[in-house]
Image (cartoon, rainbow, N blue to C red; front, top):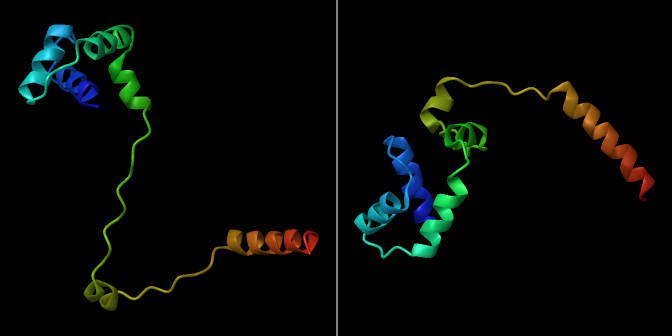
Length: 100
């Protein structure tokens, strides 16, 4: 994983992703680089458009912050059941009748 991070760091800094640069970043992080992995990474990234790969990569979304109990007391909201959920429940009831 540190090899990919090194490549991403170099890309972010607009540096060439070369074996020497990857090796330097890995060494600077306090780890001894594996020459085979460095060569494999540089070869694999040779034909990859990193900007496009990053744009199309799925992003993990952090969960929304929970409101404090104070905030929920101040603005009570009534939650209504969406109509789609009712239809889904009816469909599930129909399926359950098929399986006994």
